[in-house]
Image (cartoon, rainbow, N blue to C red; front, side, top):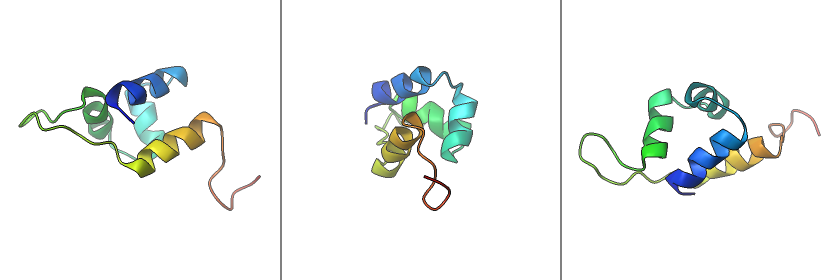
Length: 70
């Protein structure tokens, strides 16, 4: 998942950065970094973990957490 993909996912769901962070269990600053694609302090690229990409997909498809419904 690229930073552009992440931003598109958030916007497709109509989420603010704060709401996206809450939905994913992340801090807002992490969402900001994922969307920027690089760290503010040294410009190093930021990789979006596979687990976060999977969580984005699950939220997009309105899946419930494992064990919490159908």
